[in-house]
Length: 55
Image 1 (cartoon, one colour):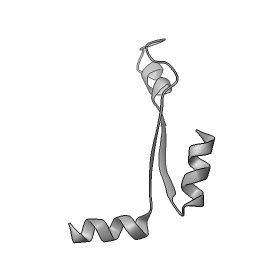
Image 2: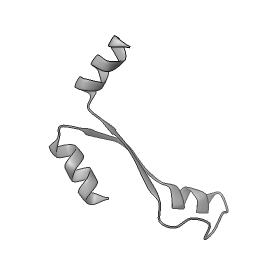
Image 3: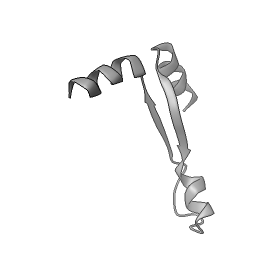
């Protein structure tokens, strides 16, 4: 996960929200239901904004 975050930042991206899905499941009472699972929301606002405006 650290390597992905490093690569995103090197490409001028921003990590908007890392989500530990296993932790969230366990906090909801679903113990040992998921393997280590993380989701990273990332992007580049300079590029992403242009795409959203054009679409």
